[in-house]
Image 1: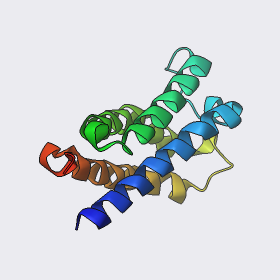
Image 2: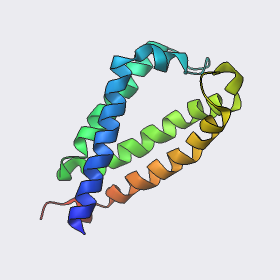
Image 3: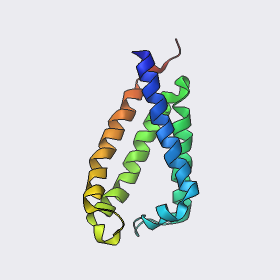
Image 4: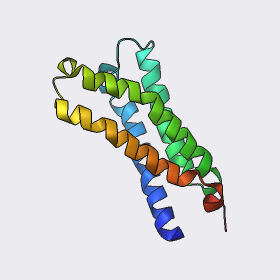
Length: 127
């Protein structure tokens, strides 16, 4: 069971590292989808990218994976309003299917539940 848990934790971490690096490779894309009510679009894109990379990498270290998982949960909650903004204002984002924008919302719930699996310290301690 620990082997499966570790494998999925590494996969989850790698997904966030890849997503975070994409913030640096394609910052204009992320700036373009940010809601207008948020200030400092460019710094927030880089900050969220850095957070995704750092927290994703910390998931690889058992000792830090509980903190990383809680951090990812907070990050996913923090970006949820922006995703909701996109879904509600789909006409502002014609590159994306409105259905896809709405499907992203429950996907964030799934990602939060996935991260929650790694919040249990007794399961993340080094054995």
